[in-house]
Length: 111
Image 1 (cartoon, helix red, strand yellow):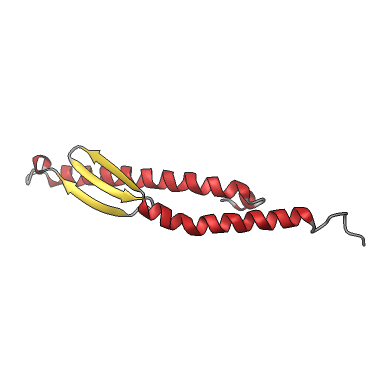
Image 2 (image 1 turned 90 degrees about the horizontal axis):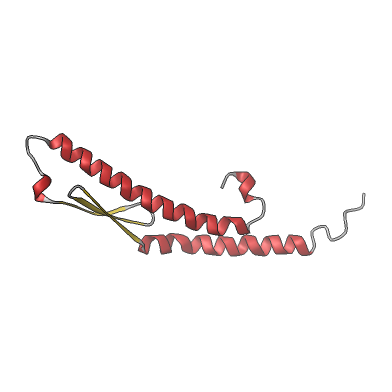
């Protein structure tokens, strides 16, 4: 059986080079994301996330603390944390998509 002309040649080399470039960018991505900061200020609850989605700080304004209604405070904290995590995740996903289109066939793997 004869293989098609240029099978495994230039196009395969280009694919490998693109895959290696994408891997190098991906390896640096975590360090880059760890340095990013996303601040959320929601109803007196302030939180900061890094680009990896990790909570870095949480501050609560004294004016929103009602000892008789801790459930409301808990809900406000959850809402602020959800927003911060969503911002960080959106940024990370956007950066991953910048890398992935350069790797042929990865879109078929669900990335």
